[in-house]
Image (cartoon, rainbow, N blue to C red; front, top):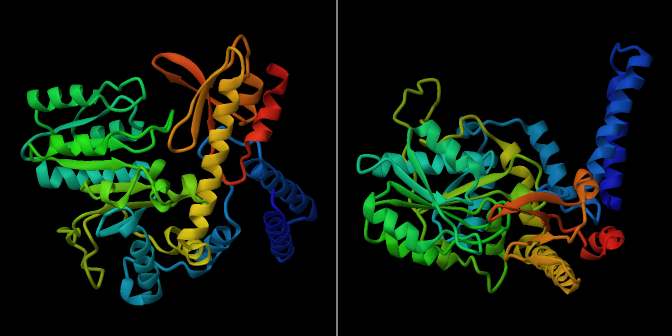
Length: 392
């Protein structure tokens, strides 16, 4: 845990202790509760450790954590925007920052990629659902796509992926000719291996049929913040909608999700007499600073340059780790543009490291592999290599 996070944890412990002292709780009960708080704060330290690479759970930036506290104190609800003009300004600031980077014109906050994918496919169904109910996505797409299609009554067909875990363009084109879709979902940052579907090739297919192109960039969307990115604004601008989860890669507390789109969304057609104005016809209902203030404070303090510097550093750490693994006899590693490294270890069982969250396991082409996710700017390749030393 960084010095800043340690200081914040100590302050939080003191505040909780002071609040408990103002209650009628018995001293023994207070001590038991404080021990539980201590254990929670201790467990939180793992995400800041230099050898944490098991999952897309980042160390939270101090300023973002303070933003979450600020949101709790503010408690405003943007279903009544006339009462909270300050939140309107903050929401506008966020999308003025992110929309140009993603080649989109407008957007709204979500509670994460699963909600963003559901919302995007709902918007797609409203526009193209009278043509078809078919949706195509890669067999490497996030399982939330399947959930969304199930909830929306859509017919999902998974398309096989190639050797790099990208959607097979030839198979997709053949499927579209046999059954034109309502929507195609491209994945920018597959969950298992961090790969990017070929958006340009997919867009060429969609030009021939009336359908929606959604990009699930919940993981890989952070690439849009760096120069010479494989996910440029021009590329992402080919899509009708793009979702992105700052809580996976930008040090944000959950929930933090964005859904951006090419066209503004109309007001809901449903009755909302208790509100002064009808909200947009989107999935989120009540929301406020909890989805805005942590991210807003982050972009205001770090800016694009500061965030890009952290992103470049962790991508470099991922490259160093993959390079080291491939130099070891009998070992194999596959890197990715998004900082996920999949690897195999000859005759080595790394289950103990998996149990600690240092690595995780997944499958590529039906084969079990280990997985290192460089989601946090605190993760270091040399720390992971040190943990592997007994197995080399």
